[in-house]
Image (cartoon, rainbow, N blue to C red; front, top):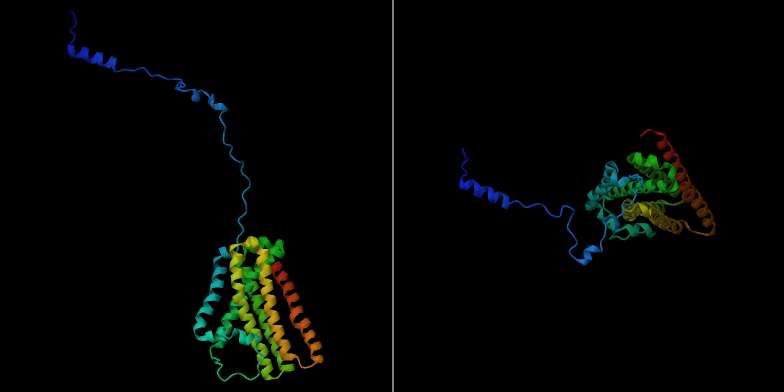
Length: 287
């Protein structure tokens, strides 16, 4: 029996055959223009070379990345800020205390009862700033201590700050004894005032140098030279004031030269040796 083909099925079959297109360009598009033929094979095109990688550099930590160390620095600055409101007169009279040798004070000069607090805050700030600078100086002068310095940042900064504080206290005691021995009460007070003011001002002058040291440690040699120069200028200001107070005749010059050697030069050598000794002790500690 013959099969009956429905007209609709024929139309559907014809549409299916006519709608089928065989894929072309199986091997890629042919060159449509002469400029395309100049490319040639893809293997002849330039290839970007990836640079060879090297060993990872060790990240050198500094007090800027150590929270306790930065907290110590901020405590010193906060103490100065809190005492400034009641002791700003002392800061305004910095240069008077550093340079003046006038034995009779002006009646209009105002000395507040809060000078002790602002002096203590400024001296603490100076010792803290010096502790940070000693940290960077040790790292530059004695690279053998660099590993322990980076592992125990706060311990080293605190130790150097304590050393600076002990050095300041020792100097104050020595100047007090010398003033009591060789000067009268007024001369001794003028001399001690010059020492306190020069040290307090030194901390404020060294603060910008310390900030640059923490931000740009690669320029440590230059910045430490600036810090040493500022320290030298501060000491010279105090020494010159002391010479003006002590000088009475030619004989006093000999005593003053002995004072320079015994009180200004030898202690710095001792502090340098103590710094090296403390660094060695801290290095031997398993931090």
